[in-house]
Amino acid sequence: MRGPRRAVVIGAGLGGLATAIRLLALGLDVTVVERAPAPGGRAARLVDRGYTWDTGPSLITMPWLLDELLAVAGRDAARELTLRPLDPFYRLLWPEDGVTLDFAGDRERLRDAVAALSPADAANLDGFLDASRRIHERAVLVAGRQAFERPSQFLRLLPAMLRLRAAGNLAAFTSRYLSEPHVHQAFSFHSLYVGGDPFRVPAVYAALAYLQLADGVWYADGGTYAVVEALVRAIEGGGGRVVCDDGAEEILVRGGRAVAVRCASGAVHPAEVVVSNADAVRTRTRLLRGAPDTLPWRLRGPRNSMSCLLLYLGCRRRFPALLHHTLVAGPGYRRFVDDVTRRHRLPSTVSLYVHAPVRTEEAMAPPGGDSLAVLLPVPNLASGDDWDRIGDAWRDRVVRYLEEDAGLDGLEASIEVEHRMTPLDFLRRFDADEGNAFGTEPLLTRSAYFRQPNRDRTVRGLYHVGAGVHPGAGVPGVLLSAEVTGGLVQRDLRRG
Image (cartoon, rainbow, N blue to C red):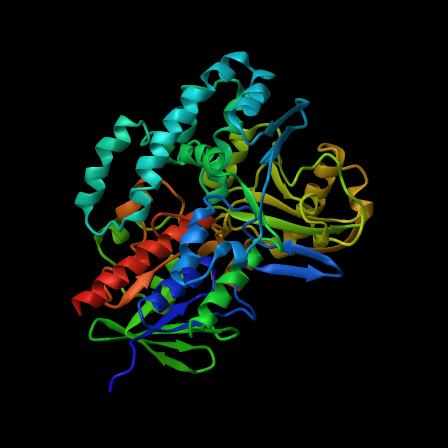
């Protein structure tokens, strides 16, 4: 008697784990293989001398996606996770201008904060949010949950995108409603969360501002890694396996079909279904040993997103200038974004994001201390920069800017322990092409049908999930990609 069909998921990032849960629900025998010593991928956890950091995603939006996913495994998200709402969501600082804006969790307070900078923009805020809501309902809640298998599906979406003005760039869309420079930046920076230049990504990313107000911004006790742990529990509780420290080396293909995954240890895992949560480009060029893809991929090619310099600082004291999430915008913001994303050169100014979870969970640092994760967007390795050589200088520059310009007095002297990630770490640890941090850059010409497909177009039985795959990066993006990929597997299994 034949046993259940087998599935191998390559990579235990959030997308891979979420897909494994969906495959288990289809009755498949599921094994997840991961090159790192622990699951999580970019959503890993770092602990040192009482300080704890999320190494990747640090906030949760659209939390109902987790409710739906864990329900697939027969689990109650409220029992598996403790989510705490943040309000304000984050603080934006422009030190050189002496401007602060706290992004509040309800429209009235947010309108008041905007009015302090621009009464005209405050009057237009509802118009911006209502336009963003319409994009969210059409582009995220509908298009983000469907597979784009044919060009015609993309073409059918375009009229709605044009009606909603969602096909133009995000910065231009925002400027129709909000013109004061600080306010405009506060409502258009969100695409940077997923590796996108606000001046070039489609205005569909205006939905990111709206969905935060609609569904809140949340923190999971224990950090985002608590989500990883909950997903692993669901997989193992459902009979699946998560095998770490043994990454995939090759997807074995026979007769045009994926039939197994060979790992670094030499272990070969036969499978009727293979799902890659690995970097989309490296899956094609390394795991498939250069097998060609179909016409859109060959002609347009994936364009990698920017990378990041990340500092994980364990500090003996706390810094009142920071909220749980704080964005510090240096001068020349447009030039900064262009340098990092378009010109592939190191920026002349500094703009940062700082995560300080002790504001919500004291246990993330020793008593009186702060566990700060500092993110500086930088070009990916296509720039040719040697981070082994320049890493120390850029670390010093970031710390000095936070201390001297952003109000974190005494930061350098307070640092008790620190760790660092550079674009080289994204390449070495995650096998990310060119050391990218967010997968494929989310341009219109690399979205939907023109993004890495959720079902491979040349190798049968091979599927893709994660930041480089439709619909895109970010925690909601990869959870939605797992939903789309799981749906395609289900459909294909029914067809036999």
